[in-house]
Length: 267
Ligand code: 1HE
Image (cartoon, rainbow, N blue to C red; front, side, top):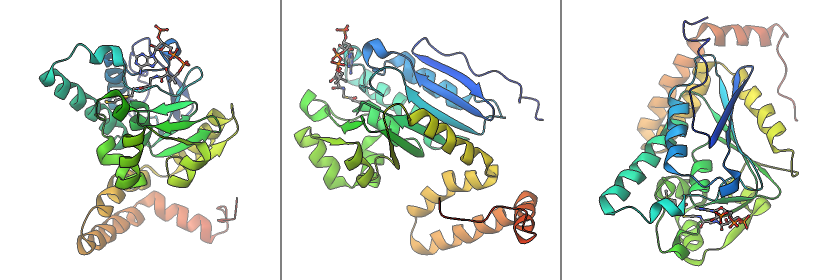
């Protein structure tokens, strides 16, 4: 056990609730009276949470309390900032969501109700997305006279394409849960109320992977995808050699060959 393994989860503002479940940490947006609108305290709390996770946390499940995952940026705070402060505010969101996307452990988000504006930006920073059938997606920034600031311009074109994001912002359209799955906004659609259990089941599977494999998937894969082909192939070979050279990988391979490991069957 590492010296920090028994460390508790970080202290969080009242708008966030966190608990441990075995190797998982469950983080919940807990401001349902404001539809989980993301104020500064919440975004800073998210950054702290992901930067200070105890070493024995292997995956995180992120969900929202109440009827909606998140109504996005807290619009009441926006009215008080000048341009310089707004830039700093957006950069703060970037830092917090980078702590998710390029953090230490994979994050499974459970989406329901409104997943809009900054709420969609938050979801897009997570690695696996489960949507309950009530989930819907929108980028209302266009209709509010503002622009995305939590990383959507970078992440969403990679998920759904620049043209589709452009159209979402121009017209304020919504996509429902099934449409969102078709576009890649979520990977699963489940019945209302079933999202958390599904998210925990998936996070448990992720947590059972070797840490070095999860590292490669989270950190090497997206970088390779943005590289030129020759550099990408080289990086892939290096990563593959590092991964398969790990003693735990060798043990897993031996277990399969000795018929001690499960087969890859359809499920
Ligand atoms: C809020 C926010 C918010 C609710 N900031 N306070 N996001 C949006 O443009 C979406 C704005 N929200 C909505 O359209 C609706 O609230 C919902 C469809 C999500 C939910 O509707 P409903 O009827 O369940 O709730 P409500 O009555 O609208 O809201 C309940 C309370 O939450 C109310 O406050 P109250 O004091 O009157 O009770 C609302 O004012 C408050 N509330 N959403 C502040 N977003 C880094 S850049 C990202 C840019 C963006 O995210 S822009 C998109 C902003």
